Image (cartoon, rainbow, N blue to C red; front, side, top):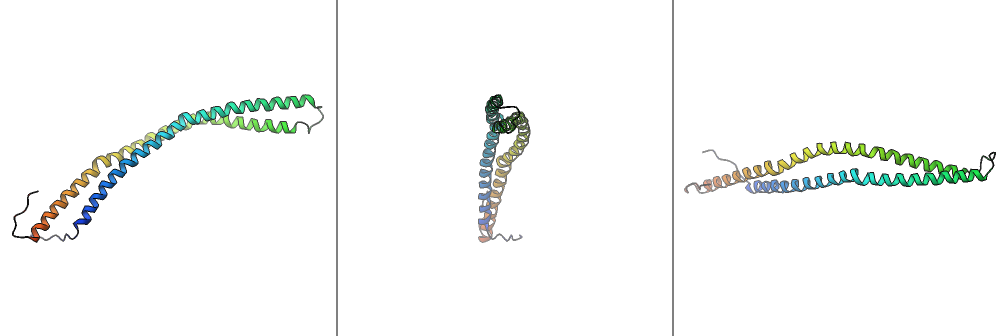
Length: 169
């Protein structure tokens, strides 16, 4: 009979425990990933459009106010006075830029949400694969390792006590 040089079954048992720990960690991580993906989806599809829609309404109101202020100022001053109403012109310019930014964001956000959903579907496939590994491959590996440990323990017992009959598994 060939002799196996098994010196540390405890290391194999520690490895089996590590596999079990990895399985539980992978399950928790997949749940966390799904939760984060859902949060981002909700943010992009609901919260962000609401935010930029509100910002657009506010910027439109401020633009109207700035335009009215400029028109009032221009009505009060003479046409040849170029420096008058400078403050109102600058305010209208800022309001116009902000309104344009908000309009751009209102247009872009739905496109981003669609791109995100495509990306999320790709990621979901990888998450499912990780979950499958955690639910099937890792438990199988752990079981096989534990069976091997049991066989090695029987072997060690047999080698240590050569006169005893082999124990049944």
